[in-house]
Structure formats: C-alpha cells, structure tokens
Image 1 (tube, rainbow, N blue to C red):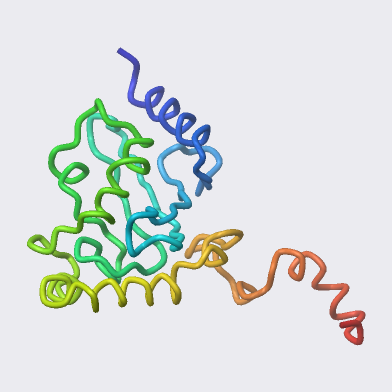
Image 2: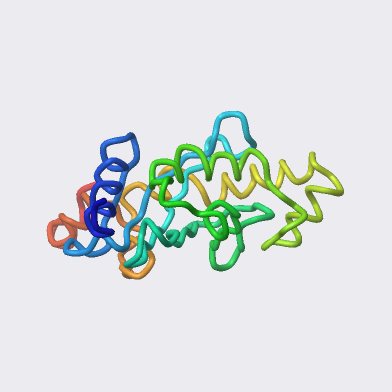
Amino acid sequence: MSSPSKRREMDLMKLMMSDYKVEMVNDDSTHEFYVDFHGPKESPYHGGAWKIRVELPDAYPYKSPSIGFVNKIYHPNVDEMSGSVCLDVINQTWSPMFDLVNIFEVFIPQLLLYPNPSDPLNEEAAELMMRDKTSYEQTVKEYCEKYAKLEDIVGAAPPEEKSSDEEMSEDEYDSGEENVADNADP
C-alpha cells in the first residue's frame, strides 16, 4: 500500500492527464488546487463553467477532500455564499477507493443532474425547485450567464490572488507600460 502523499500525487497527476485544467495554489504543495469544471450537457447547468477549489487533507485518500465552487452557482446543495458542497459521497460515505477523477467525472455531474432539495445548503433554491421546477431551471441558467461564463474562469486569478488589475487581459497587463507610453494607439 502506498503512502497518502504518493497516492495524492498519483491522483492529482491522473486528474491533470484527464481533460481538466488544474491550477496549483502553491507549486510545492499538492494539498490545494483549482479545477475548471463545465456543467453537464443534460442539465440546466450546460454552458456554465466553474472554478472549483479542492483541498486535500494530509490523510487523503483515507479522509475526503474539501470541495467548493469559487464562482456562484444556483443549486440546492451548494451554499451560495461560500460555495461549499453538500454531497454525501464526499462528506459521509467517502472511501479510499474513490479518487479525484471520480469527483469531477461522476460525483459533481451527478450532483448537478440530480439535486437533492430535501437536504439543502441553499434553501431558496431547494424551495424553488420543489415549488416551480421551470422557474428553478430558469434561475440556474441566469446564474450560469451571469457568474459562470468561460471567461470567468479561464485566465482568472484565484480569489486570493486577484488585484485591482483583474479586469485586464493578460496581454493588456503584460504590455501595461507600453499602453501608458503609447496611449494614442487604439
């Protein structure tokens, strides 16, 4: 049996080799990173793109990772303010048999496809889903349009690293001195 640190590295490498963009928070640590995630096609979340923060405990895979959406999502089982996820397989029934790829290819897509309004973190979303599914799905799509566009996650700095220049593209930021010197060019 391999050590938790070897397993963590192996699972992280497997996730990086799949089609997910993984962004490390600290180059010398495999404990915290961000993963770009896209909503499943068969759901009202289709077209949405989220940056998901993952923290692996020292005892991973024997202890479950902490998962949270960075940009807003409207879902009964996701806290709108913190992005925390209420998912039994991660919170209570986690097993070392699971890995990071399972989380992004199975668990989160299942959560988005089959919300559980009877165990909500977002009571407003749960109540709307149970009362008026069409309005719920419309609100989900509005949130996707407003908070979960691809440009919201691609090239964006993680929240703790954002600066006052966050609205600038990388090219504008890299050539900032030239723009100041040559302001007349369009």
